[in-house]
Amino acid sequence: MSTIKRHMEDMEGKEAIALQLAIDEELLESCEYHGTYYDARATDLESVIEKVQDGFQNNSRLNSSFSSFDEFKEVLESIYHDHSGLDKCGLCSERGL
Image 1 (tube, rainbow, N blue to C red):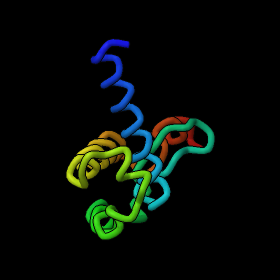
Image 2 (cartoon, rainbow, N blue to C red; image 1 turned 60 degrees about the vertical axis):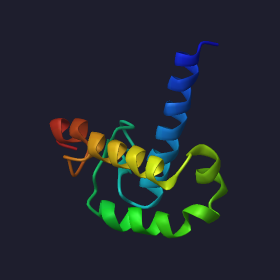
Image 3 (tube, helix red, strand yellow; image 1 turned 180 degrees about the horizontal axis):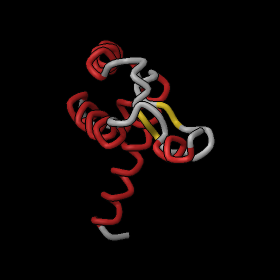
C-alpha cells in the first residue's frame, strides 16, 4: 500500500472518530432519513473541546488514534465547520420535512 493511500485512510479514520464524538456530544446531528450531518445547536464547539481536553489522556481510543490533543482538536474543528451552517438537514428542508 502506498504511503499516500495509507495516510488518506488514516485521515478518514480520524475524521470518523471525530464525527462520532461530535454526534455523541450533540455538537452535530445525523438526519435519520438522509444520513447527512448538521449543527443542531444543542452544544457549542468550545464546550466540547474543553470536555474532551479534560479526558483526552484517559481516552484510549483517542490516544491511539491521534498523536496529540491538538491534532484531535484540528480534526474536530474541521469536521464541525464542514457540517455546521444548517440547523437541520438540507434535504429535509428542501422537501418540507
